[in-house]
Length: 363
Image (cartoon, rainbow, N blue to C red; front, side, top):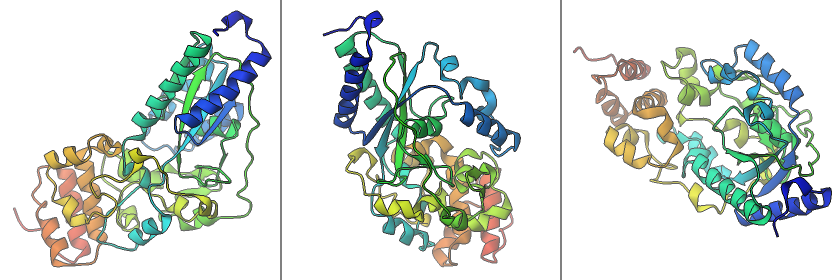
């Protein structure tokens, strides 16, 4: 039965929240929470992070002013935010750790091995909104999945999904941190959940293991040093000081999650959309470097990897090849791109060849 919007009672909203949690489970979400829209503490932290210039070239982090930390400014009428968690770990963590020790294989962040998570979560959240409408009638809402100025980790922490760890990722005590977040901004006055508190204690595993020392203090990440930023967000040359530390990571980095003690509870997902595609979980660097753009476009269709473009893809692989053991195959691969039309690619190929004590051939 449809409930007229102006007659909602606390009992109605409590019942609806139970239904929402049940529907979220049916839609494949592993956890659901509800929070109010007071993000005062998170707003202060964001302002300090921006003042420190830790966002690097990600100017969009400051472009929208307070809309990021004040949901009602982004979506007028918002009273609550429904937050959801969807696990994505595609395989046992040990496989990923072994891959980091194999210098000839490409390491791609586990979240990007399958279908683009934006599409998966967005579709499920829209289905949730339709389910709510079917039961109570029209209501105000907007769906977000890492696609707008939204402080998703702060909202998830306030709604009890987990706590922000020292590496600045969200952690759940029972599931670790291998999960995506999504939000449904709504004008429904649903009961809110208790915020989660930190359980990191004195542990510094993520800080100690970071290849580029990007976690400059507990709960503080300098994105300019982060391999995920360097290989994805950064559009120009990768600073020379970080190239050796990148190792074989060609898209993102998972080290702070791989070695977090809380992830001993993480289990591989049964979500088929997040299963590795096109052998990207075991691909050789030389094979990927040989792809032409048409092949790359075909192999990355529907993938989050598409966002960096073919040029940055080759830039990243060139660095990884520079860090690989010297073999005939590696040298042949690098030389095949030393006359590329992209100065960005040529620069990184030149650096990579120098790591193998080989100079560039004359034009």
